[in-house]
Length: 151
Image (cartoon, rainbow, N blue to C red; front, top):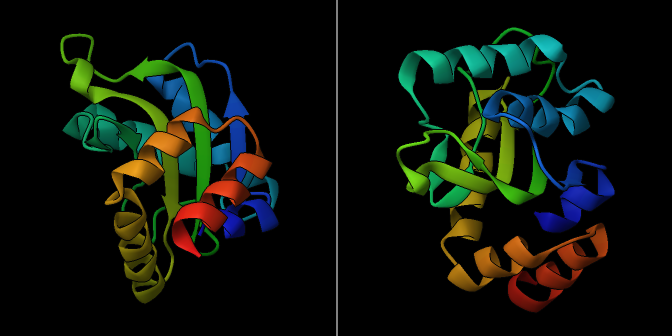
């Protein structure tokens, strides 16, 4: 999966995002760059978080920005990765809702979406992988993590 992020240019490394809304927009940029989604999708995710709260923070330090299946602005199913050096706060009163790793999911096909979610859950179930990803600073680091823990 990490190798796919690198091969498809679906990754981004940044120092910080000023707000969680900016973090979501930034996490969508790699998917926007190749036409997987357009800017309406990021707005759809932001609207969902405003409505339902920070449901996208699935475990401490890890966010999975996504909207509803078949959401506006999605042309195909894919995932991208973004690492932020400074934690992004989704709830100022709950540090467990901070994130530094973002796995942005775009879903058009329900079967592909489910498969992508399963791959992501498998990846994130390994604490060593999550810790290595928190230290990653480049696409080369992603490839090293893939080779060390996944291949």
